[in-house]
Image 1 (cartoon, rainbow, N blue to C red):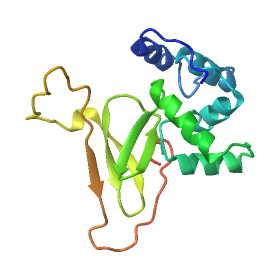
Image 2 (tube, one colour; image 1 turned 30 degrees about the vertical axis):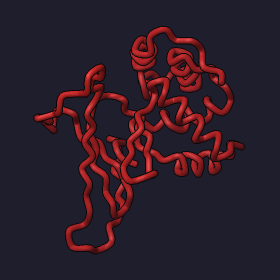
Image 3 (cartoon, rainbow, N blue to C red; image 1 turned 90 degrees about the horizontal axis):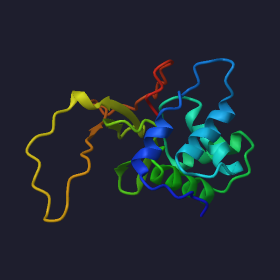
Image 4 (tube, rainbow, N blue to C red; image 1 turned 90 degrees about the vertical axis):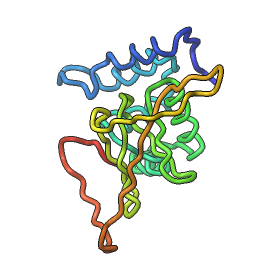
Length: 179
């Protein structure tokens, strides 16, 4: 594995978050921003990581499954295997560039928004939408077992159409907080 040593992962994560994303200046180079983001997170910018980083981060905050990203890579004519996509998503998550959102059994989405927040999961169309962290108050947490501490609490609110009819997936422009 080509992960560069990082003494404090929170420092790498903080450095990666300092890169403006998506790029604000039309004169800036988005490929350079992907490379810098990977390096700041302690990852070597290989061709595969660069390609997947571009696909993931160029569209703003979003939620993708490995299969969705693999399909995007195929459409972009990137010669990657599904195993490479899974490995890269795992590496990006471990480096703090992505957040894993496990919604149902093995069904996992990867979230480009790594800030503290929660999620709606629509069971009908299998989409994930962000809920700002300030909108949910969690109380009454149990005391962690001896020698352990609670590192985070994530709430997933499951949704389904109330009348049982098929749900049409709508993609809103601008916000980009959906799959």
